[in-house]
Length: 141
Image (spheres, rainbow, N blue to C red):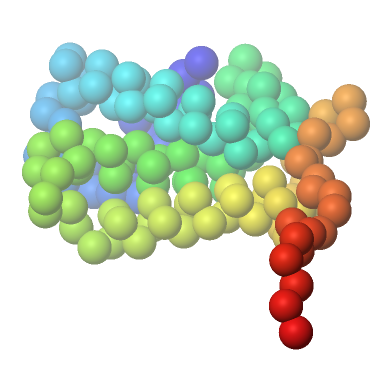
């Protein structure tokens, strides 16, 4: 499910810098970005499916992909692209932006942020914990 086009990346990163990272955007570089996009979408769906219908949020056929999700997706892809080249020297900006993307997705999944995304038709599957701590078996006073 590819939802991004090359112009979407240029909103986040300069064209020449992107080509330095992945190579020629008409050949193998674009194929690399598409592979990384598939991985990032799978990760994003894991967070969104807790409360929202991720397929509707990221549906490219109707162009309904929400712009904030596209930006977060690009940040995740760019981090992974830099990690392919120099895993020990990823720019701090890319680390920070990926961290922000993951934090945002975690808050959406936990319900702390309630964006205007299509909600699942089923009951949300947020795991709930019941009970208390382990009972004490040996109490000495």
